[in-house]
Length: 76
Image 1 (spheres, rainbow, N blue to C red):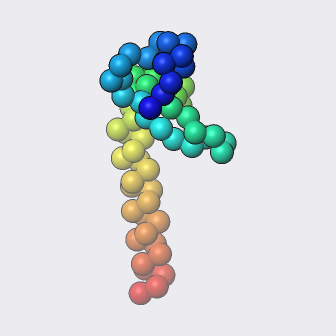
Image 2 (cartoon, one colour):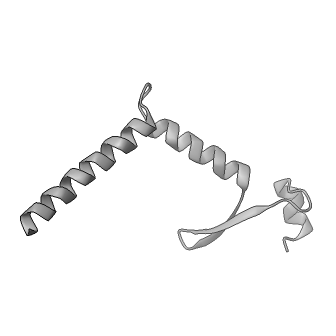
């Protein structure tokens, strides 16, 4: 239960869903939409223009498969 004064100050509507997590030893409550917006922004910043996240993931998986195959052959 969040006190009415805080709800008004934060612009929270009755029944609004918040996500709780710990950040630097503090409890943080965030709206789901704010979290999604932040994650989308971080993903945009992490990728180069014209870069396909699918292609990046596939390349990473292929590298990992080659590494595992090399380890297996050394151990066999």
